[in-house]
Image (cartoon, rainbow, N blue to C red; front, side, top):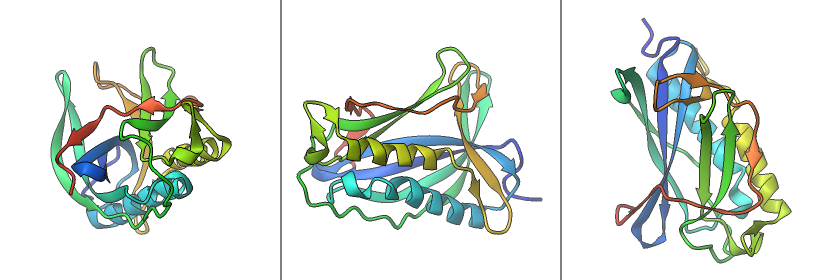
Length: 202
C-alpha cells in the first residue's frame, strides 16, 4: 500500500530565514488526488517550492533564505487539525540574489484565495521584498506580476514522477471542511506578515 492515500491531507510549512535571526512561515495544505510514496513526494514538493518561490526571485532580497521545510500528514480530529505523521524534509534549490535594500521584516506581498465557503479563504504573505518595488505601500507592476506568477504556481497540481498527485486547498479550522480557490487576488498594497518567530532563524 502507498504511504500517502487518496484523500490524505498534507501540510507543508515553508521556512523563510530572514536577517536578525527571524524565521517566517508560509503554511500550505494539499489534498491527495492520486496515491503515492514519500520519497517521490518529497522531490515533487521540492520542485513545487522552486516553482513558487522562483517566480519571486526578481523581487526578493538576497538576505532571505528559502530553507528546508517539513512535510507532514494531518487529520481532522473532533475539532482541530492534528499531525499524524512527519513525512520528511523538502529541500528547495531557489536562491534569492537581488542586492537592492530589503523592506522591513513585517512588510509582505499578499495573495488571497477566496472560496465558495463563507469566511473561508487562503492568505499567503511573502516578506523580504526589495524596497524598489514598493512606494508608499503600493506595489509596482514588477512585484504584482511576480506575485501573480507565484499565485498561479501555488494552485498548479503537484505530480510525482512515479505516482502521486496533490493540489493546494483551503481547509477550515472550524469544521475541517475543504474548499478549492474560487479565484486569485494579488493585493496592490503591501500587507503585514505576522507569522514570524524572532530569534529562531539560523
